[in-house]
Amino acid sequence: MDPEYPYGGAEDRQLVKQATAISNTLSTQLDESGKKLLNDLLEIDLNRIILVQEDAFAIGVCTGIKLMCEVQAHE
Picture 1 (tube, rainbow, N blue to C red):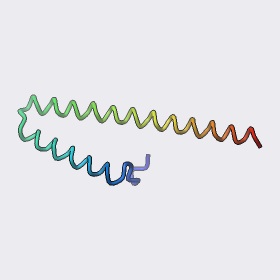
Picture 2: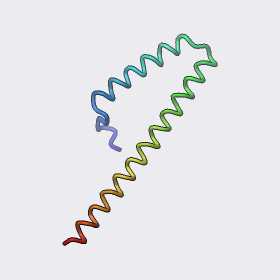
Picture 3: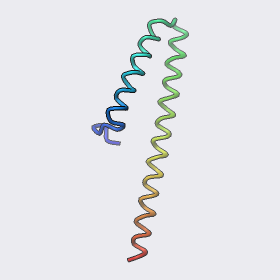
Picture 4: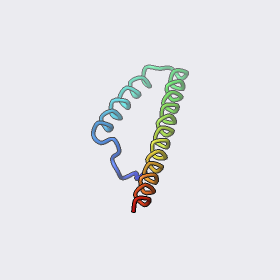
């Protein structure tokens, strides 16, 4: 993925801002145990997002290859 490309656009940036604000608020209200749980939860969610992105990329590549093969077969 290109780190310079704004994946998700403005809506994604707004959701990131909201999530960061909530995380910061919770971080000030939680004790150390709660902060660790919050960080663990955020880490799990990030890992889940990465897995979904990897799967979507792989499906996209495979679909593109199948399409190229079909086009080549009809020429």
